[in-house]
Length: 423
Ligand SMILES: Cc1cc2nc3c(=O)[nH]c(=O)nc-3n(C[C@H](O)[C@H](O)[C@H](O)COP(=O)(O)OP(=O)(O)OC[C@H]3O[C@@H](n4cnc5c(N)ncnc54)[C@H](O)[C@@H]3O)c2cc1C
Image (cartoon, rainbow, N blue to C red; front, side):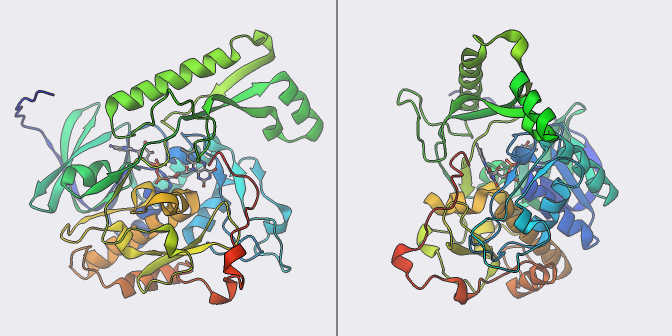
């Protein structure tokens, strides 16, 4: 590929922020809210026109299990607050056992909840604006301006053109480590299977909904290639998609939309309507940082001194993990941190930490780390993790799982729960 040099004088946006969060998915929302609740001046920049990222815009409207599959809740804190908020104004599917908190008796029914993605998105906008977080929609963060390994600010691109914006701490929650990668933080990429799911309403669904009195029964999924997390049904001729390559992402969207159209164009036109297509590419693990630590599958049941939250496996009962602070940072980069999909994980461990509830926990930790770094005037790569942990714990995050929850028979542990294969 050729290159060219292009110089341009661009305006500096007036204010400097304590914390700029790039990407308004659940991880970015958690980071922004946490820093704001500690009194920091926070700007959240989102390239699309709604908050929630994959969870709303991407139509992934299901909080995966927040319990160990035996009736013990593992994930609390902001993840639980978001879950409860996601179902406050729209329809909700949640097992009765968990509606009023942790069940009194052990149960194998898992703590999950699905919600209306669009109602959650508009509720989020009201909520975040009311919390005093400044929001920029339809603005892409394109370039971190670096002085060595320190980020002086960001170049953003919106309808006003390019602008430079200053922030003391930058949280990269673009899902693809866009900023940290461009800042020179080492990263790792992974190809994605080809998944594409929209929401459809059918006459049959309407009849079901009229009978049950539940509006959600009217909807069903409409797919392009419906390939699951493990690649089941991936046609061999379709290459895996790297979510950080412009051509590949465009090709992925085109391919899936054409396949989806092929799947429905023979139906009776009056029998159904597509209500929404995903507003962003439904890619799971595209690019994560090569952090100070990378979580591995072999870290199941391992305690970390610097854990910022315990989490559970969405597929297998009993499997528990702790997420060390070091998966969010790379030493030397003193004001850059990530959370959510681009936290450092490898193999299946990356899948465990990228889903909605743990993405919220890592976002919350990034927000708390930003606060500690600002208050103690030190680099975010050098914060006293005990202080970050204390804030997480005060905010009701379980830092360490209880060893009593580790099954006695480890050989046979990890029995699958329900099939969450599309995740
Ligand atoms: C097919 C599929 C099925 C899944 N199923 C489930 C499930 O059932 N349950 C579950 O819990 N999880 C599921 N997941 C995972 C889960 O949805 C995501 O991993 C989680 O929502 C990630 O949140 P995030 O905030 O890290 O990233 P994202 O949700 O990707 O948010 C990133 C945000 O940043 C914005 N952005 C990106 N680049 C820029 C930029 N340069 N400037 C400004 N903004 C930018 C994006 O528009 C987006 O809003 C699934 C994922 C996929 C792909």
